[in-house]
Length: 110
Length: 119
Image (cartoon, rainbow over all chains, first blue to last red; front, side, top):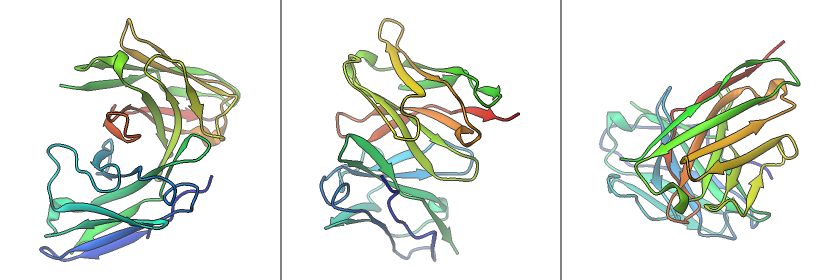
């Protein structure tokens, strides 16, 4: 099972919105509404920010939102803040009972 | 509050073995599936293994199948990962993670345990 495809890096200015894409196949992203997104600051464990494509866990800012179309999922961060600068990973449940992550996207807030 | 504490990492030679542990507290451990996820130095996340809440199902990434074994002791609220036949490419921080309400997402993570495979 290959990793999901994410851009290596994205950037935005404070207050702007950015979108990170996550492209898979019809064996993972396209087959299930089981895409999740994680934020990871350097040296820290990942933090769940989106699950089941669009849902936010309790306590996660509503500036984070998720969507999906066919084999591509997306994470949008609106009203960018300096603290959003981090690495972001998508993940999907896949056929043959496994989970597959994206390669990660480094977000720079300029 | 939910807490997961990873332990058991260390330096091991190629071909060696280790047992990683994850002590859970703050939730009813026997109710939730659990995962191991790893991250090689400077690299991305890789899912490793999953075990159902009662231990009845165990799934593995192809890269570790036949070498790693996931298990749990619900009476001790502890998750384990037995890692055998270690390779240099298994060098990584290993995180345990809790399944989120059967949504196949990982909502709480341990702090990670570093496994270094080197001669």
